[in-house]
Length: 342
Image (cartoon, rainbow, N blue to C red):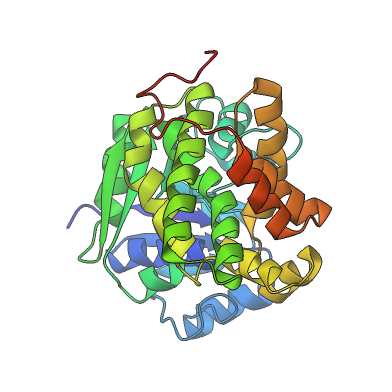
């Protein structure tokens, strides 16, 4: 095994807890930060996080704390698993205890509302000297907790970050691949949340396998088209962080975004769907942000536009589906046949 490292994880939701436990099971010291002192005490005493992962036994190498100073002290690597709406605020609070050239890795799949910033961009703005990475892929936390075979991607400009993350996370059931396309990997993880809502919606309405297949492949086309306009490498989208994450999120009832879409398909309002979930579904806000950004950049995204009408304007699904099927017949694979007028 590699040398014992001190690792911090900010955020004790489902995925933050799973990442902390993988690192701890590999023999490293992990400090887990959360806001709730009662939950922190429970984790330290009983080695479990019942709110997010009941019956999941946590390593005794994990120490939970509400003190950012204690958690970040001497941490060589920091995973940030904070929902997008609170991400910048937590990083601002953490800055006094981050070292020069700190290794910071975001696991959050979302976009900041007012700035359209990805989490890696927030890290760069707030901690300019840090070495930054993102972790993304088809990684449903409950399946990772059950030690189902899983793969993920660490993307970073820093070879040191890529190597260290691969080293401390690799296990018999969790494999970490490397990429230098930070933006593409992060956008893949963020954009697929939108289409998971569409997949859940279609499942609730009883749509067939042909429809599901069409939905996922056209979703991939939209994702890659948008991401390339934002500076990503289109090849990233044929990997784990693109099509891999899209498949698992669009096909699994474990996906929070899928479950929101399913509830909408059953006739619930958006507020009812989110309330029933009890956790953050990043895709809901991402729909709004991406629709606005795509319009500003002139990127053709009919699925996003249609889903926006269903989710936020209560448009009948049948009407939106008809609109999508009557829209322009585009090319099949992006970047193979030029779009007319481009």
